Image (cartoon, rainbow, N blue to C red; front, side, top):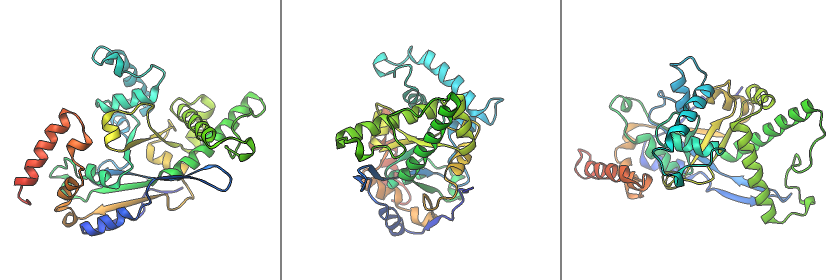
Length: 322
């Protein structure tokens, strides 16, 4: 089984940070020789210290002190949030009841623990969140940025989901339904590029729905093999958009996020990286990110962001390192 303990790349200066981050390819979609969509995308997550909660969603931490598993606890809290949120949030800003992903995103946005783990398409935004609001105690240990190959994750996720679909078909003793071939979007279907993108979007939506609420057969497959999926709600909020954000979530309800990801990606190499930063490299990192317009105001486009920006600007102008 793959274990998430690859030796991190240690960055000792701002120059080493930019060299490491700029080596990642920019997000790209293209067509391969068989006419299928080919991705090249990495996503990033900052951790304020590598010993804190590495790749652990908030609902798992919350479940540690309860008699419920994380999936049952999430279901209870989400149902309670859905009942009461409509009294405090305009109906125009509430998702449809069946849109579980958007409800989870909304709940997490307001502080409810969920399975969603925040990532961003920008390594520099990931670094910002690794440095933001670090306590004195946290500063005694180096922060980290995790990088995950989202395209590799998607490819494995599709295969595992198809394996689960096959288990369902065998259990129901029905022939394989037409529609999505094993190598979906085969040119033999004579689909246009617009058709292919539309079909892929629908397939991704179905994949996420099966991962969020698997039936008993799929649940058994996911728990055995692990499954972590990347997701965006149908309608993004302002913060998620400003942060170039996306989510990863665990579909294996009997596993932790880390165990599910490890099972899923076992035997595969090069799909994730870790970066660790010594304090000398971070002396002026916040100021450099501020120059790049990565600050509280740009990432939190609301009154909370305004207040954070004011505090941050004063600290950078008048702080000891200014």
